[in-house]
Length: 409
Image (cartoon, rainbow, N blue to C red; front, side, top):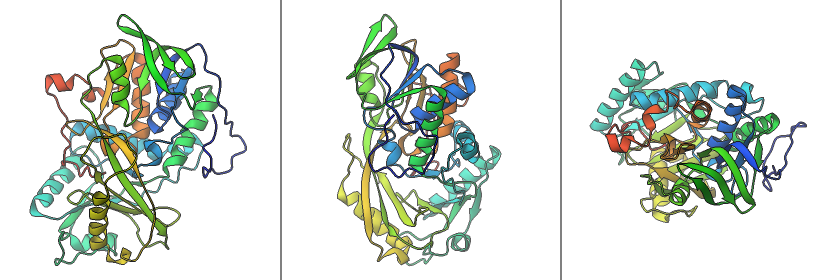
């Protein structure tokens, strides 16, 4: 592996960054060197002893969506199927620093999901009760409770989006996204996994109902099993294989402010106005918007989305009105019709999908890595991801999280 130029990497004397020559063949080839692909490689090695694995990355390690995400981690989703996988992931987050032996800066500062209308309140209280039935920490707090948890929120009723209360998950929080990727990469590399950067997939070789090789700009790589984990670009890969996948790719924008003293103690999200605000460990305010409505693969977005996001953020947090923008960026997210992911089998015997996470991909990182590794090892979907199979769009067994679980992020 090679380290991305300018990356802010903590000192570790035992790092081994190399870019190996691809072997002729691997037991498992994972396409996508972001959080999900690296986590899958780590758990294949750790949980199942499978180390003849290659992770192929078109660019550089974790240089795609992993470096452009929300950093928000939570499990307070509505439906049983969603809450199960995200709660499994949150439990893994809680022990991940020890597991990886690496500082991922996981901070359980809690997440507030604001309600701005009576319907928001009804939906939010419903979600809290559903969370409790599934053993997930969740509570409803009124406007004064919101103010107590986050004193800088404007709870005046004389604003466009009055705060009528919020759901609160105390165990939720944030982590430093690039450190998470490097932690997984370090452990996978130490186990013998090959992480090959600058390796673009240009096609596949097939034999009947199996894919026997992955054609890349570095040559053809044989594969026993293949996992597609290229966030935002899954449809490019499935098109090469002739697999119809109901995902659309959209830009997703975010930004950070200049460095500020600690003023924001938690994470505040508003699904109604599609904005979230947290404060990073160094002091930047991290703000994100909803997805741009148009389809595209460009890592940028429309200005009016950011403009609306900032107007809503300043209304909710007047104290930020004079903060300066440091930088903004865009990622690319795969979105399914029911706002839930696709994980599991494809029409090919040895090809597995992991896509469609929308804005939920980062928080699912260790959980889906664990479950996809199990699925690859046993040729059977892990129970936590079984409901998210591709055939649910034929059977109609959808997991419709659209708006149900405050899925702004």
